[in-house]
Image (cartoon, rainbow, N blue to C red):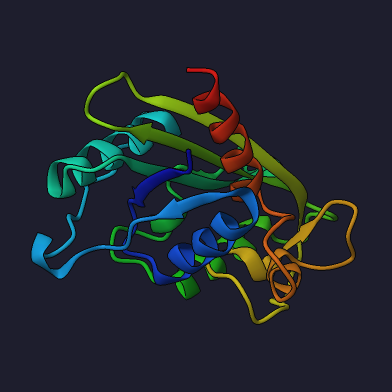
Length: 195
């Protein structure tokens, strides 16, 4: 039986990526129905990726009453002691744009040579019946000083993937199999098959 769920996001770039992942990994996305009303804006905390993913999954479940998968993803830069981490989307402040987030990141990294980093993706599946199921994976790389690539979103165009001479944004111009989110979805589906 094919797994079906709503993906908890209002980010169009992230939704498009998950739709592409669904075709490769083998699950079905239930797209939002206008009859459900406006999608919820879930307030993220500062405790953990797992807590944020759970909050989003439960918030969207209360909205649509269907199985939900939510993610919380962050960029962790080693020379910044793991920052921006769970604050990645609001690194330069609550109302920050992605441009100001990236500008702050590059300023803080400064002249650090080959600044190592990773993307971390935590997924949470919640169906309102069983306890939440979690899956997590990472993608290692370095931060480049200049943006490169036209696909993806967020910090993708600054993040050179380990083992590739390309940014994640450039790799996404071809497919999404090199991403932390793709790897986490593979793990999540394996975990759900065992339940």
